[in-house]
Length: 114
Length: 113
Image (cartoon, rainbow over all chains, first blue to last red; front, side, top):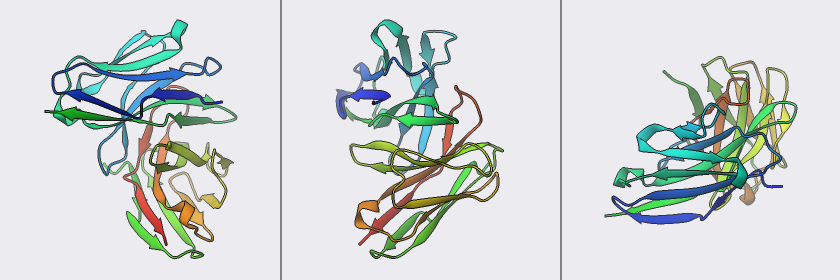
């Protein structure tokens, strides 16, 4: 069963518009959720993580995500897109199956139009 | 501040050739991982190692072997490369625990012709 599902492989927004990237997780996994960003020709870097301290999590570069247990969602938002936000974004969860391992969603590529 | 270092950055192999991808981390992390990234597939876990001396299969282990040489190093070997193994490979490491982030290398772009 897929642990995390990202809706939309590509999202396109205009500069200054709201960014919304969707992630739903399997209710059978513990809610240790992450968003990573990958800029072209680079490895992934952490954007933010949910650790149960607060449902609204703030990350770097103005991004935030809200954990909603009732909807099994952890969507990523940013009020105003900037050209430098163009990248691929991955939702991820940590599973404990005899060792902790990070499982990633398929990714959403964000395009920002001038 | 090196973090996770992968070598090589690029490689072209002929079908049937073998090679080893090297990975080293300097953060004293117990867990290390190998992922492959393909368009539309996200990152898929090949193998991981929860501690020195242990390795476990991930989602797509067929055609690969790994060695956790010591706490710092985790290598990935392709014994007989196939075109289906053309991909970008990432090594990552993390500390123990459920809410710890993974740190990634810059990736190895492998083409098998």
